[in-house]
Length: 428
Picture 1 (cartoon, rainbow, N blue to C red):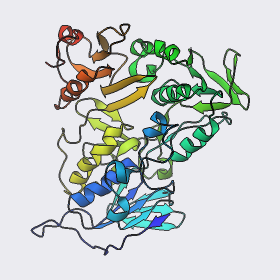
Picture 2 (tube, rainbow, N blue to C red):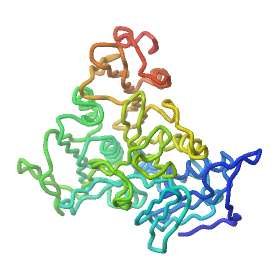
Picture 3 (cartoon, rainbow, N blue to C red):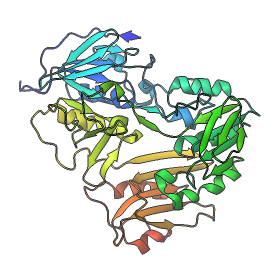
Picture 4 (tube, rainbow, N blue to C red):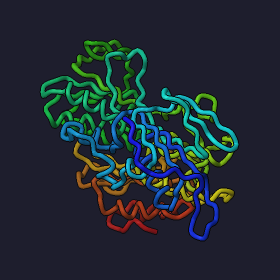
């Protein structure tokens, strides 16, 4: 799908007063939330140059969280034009929703993206191609859930009484399990770690979610690897077989950057390291930027922060554009340093996570998880009161306080006895 608004081609861009400002043309590779917000930020900043968008799915930009949270009750996409009020077809000069990027050439002055329909050259590039779901090659009978097409296929395949095996008890796996179980699907969740969400929260905190599965009518199998997936179900490494009508692989996602080849330096998982202004480190010039799921962002507060955070895709493009349109400026250490933020509704519980937990950090619990009235977990660097992350579970009064804690340039300091007392406000 190609949509080209009737916008005059601009050769230069400027700000009031006539001072030259930034590139004359910007190419945005990707058509998700981060790409949409980049286009919006360019126009809101007064950029009058040419903007081209290259998408891959053939549909207008949509919001991804409802794909799992509302798998069975959202029969049409949550269009970003409605959700965030940004219609890229009216803001960009060219929008090609079914023309994925296939390769990249970068010079100190411009960029050229290769596509099946020919090359596209611009002064600056924003890589916002998102992520793709991980699917082991041998799991030929499994489905994934990352795109609207995935959601359509999974929704059509599930009927009340069907047997669904979800491989992976992370954010997506737990959300789908709860939604499907409420619809009368027989759900089994298999997790290789010894607790759900262990990769994100660590084993101690992840284990606190185990009772939720039984309460929701979901069978949970932990500490078992999947040996094979076939038309009959899932075979575990110990030889046990889990019969299934549908198998969902929810074992993570990786940055969708294979199309870059060797044009830009990439991490082992495909991520692009970026600075505080979202410039790709190692690229020949500051005219190559990246935002959203593809990034590994430098943070003064948290060190290196991986992409994949919805809030970052929503808000970080404004920081990227502000820096891009001021060539030669060095981004300040605090610029763009948004704390990682995850929200999830799973198995009847509301979770919010701010910051970046680490298995090497100490955990302080606020409230009693067994009491059923909400609780909060806090991660601390060993030997002090430096707070690195906060997870709230069914405790909305702690959400705003946790967000405020991570607005300063450095990690917040919060006395552990104060944090552990659920009757006291969550603030220094």
